[in-house]
Length: 388
Image (cartoon, rainbow, N blue to C red; front, top):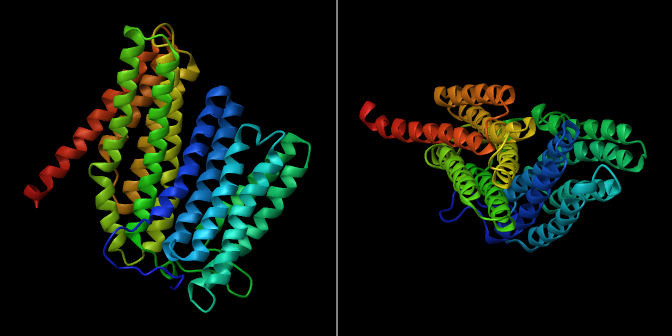
């Protein structure tokens, strides 16, 4: 069995072991949501943002790896098992990643990125894809210095600075196509990926994030005293998660998968539309999950600015990410999403100025706007054949 994955064959593109691997990231997303929930401040939000970006990058590069390398090959399967262990350590360290468990988090993250890349470089010897991973490995080795140095210093501010440099190196490398001594820059046309696999992997992570939202909704309801207010808030928040699913999956997901599969440069779309543009969508779902917990726990009364930010900012961020995604894939902006983002921002300003608006009303507003976007998409798509 060759380690290089065979593209173009019919059947499922995502292997069962990849689905098994994803279970670790269910725990990671839960940790991120709880971190944001327990630190209702700008510094807490900044930490949650930073750690979410790191977790996404660890997962995303593994998806690129399994796009090129078969998860059914013994070497890759053993590698994925190792990565699961490191990912669990990384996720467990999230609550104290900027404190006592900084070294845990940094070592686990560096191990995921560097050891995975090293194994693939060895496993793909003699294949053109090896050059791609050599370039990737160079940049991960460079950023690893800053990750480890940041974990070893005692000053929290200096740690944050070093880690920001490390993350900028990790995120900037694909954007500038991994310029590497001797090998030079890579070309996106060299990243000949299976577009359907890339699309499905990112769709599955959206499902993971939405699953965390539903988990927090159910857990909050189970931990409180059911009454008319909490049941109404629970129903509205659950419908909000369903509306988010509808916005992404009803029309756009399949069309985008077809588009990247038939693209002349699937590597560029894989980088721009899936690796980068999905980040605000994932962040928006996590923020919305925290907003759901706050609304269900206290559906009536006044809305704090933090509750307003979570309940309305989450859906706005999600729609902003989806707007960017559609722009990168199809080359057009979505008027319905841009309008919806404007309405959510306006509602947020009003809610901050008029705190007497109850939290459940905020979720109702977000739900109504998401439903309008979903219905707009569905109706527009159904009119396309007739227009054609």
